[in-house]
Length: 285
Image (tube, rainbow, N blue to C red; front, side, top):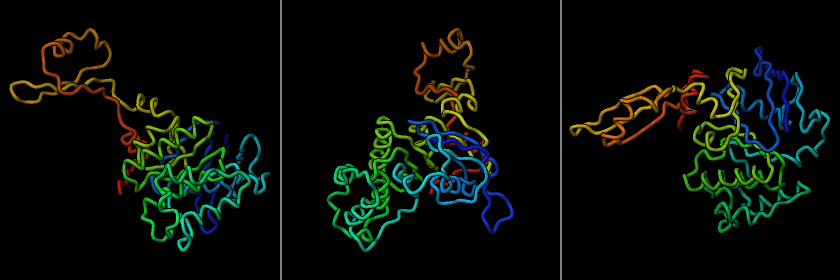
């Protein structure tokens, strides 16, 4: 869907490049995670891909065509949900959606989307009276108004309770299953792990790693098996190498004779990989 080749970008008042020659692709029908610490270049890259920033170096193609060749028809095919919801606060939610609908040739069913996200009952309420979570959900509705082929989602579940976050994630999966492509940025690594086919880590304007979450876990994880069992009223923990574990007599005997409480592989988490690759702790605010 997108191919980015040697992308470089420097903000007018800066001497140093913000984006330092990155290359990657986003396959049609995949959910591509773009991860990194604050200031790494995620938002800048996204703004370039959606044609909000120009004056870059390198080549970007969308469906095989250089994005510089597109006119405003380009925006018919993409939907964007920014991290900070942007609406007209002195208009109702439905008035907002109807306003934005008029910008596009293709129109989704607003009622269906708003009902799915629990907003239909409050459709006639001023957006200024909406809670942060309601604004985030309305933002997601807006991103889908033009039935886009490509979605750009920036922290789509940040600030949502688990129930509404699950609804958003379910809708993202359904969008993919229907043939849509997603560019996702998020600091919520569990969301990334659940949703993304591939992820790229950007650090200081450069991509450090690109692979599937599974392959990254195999690369950075330990090939071990840790089990916990009760003995004399206390919890005992033992760790065994994964290789040859089926013939490890001590491990097998523990399974057969002890009251096993937990059994875990040494698989690392995406959060741990994020910290290893970027050298930055995640902000959990």
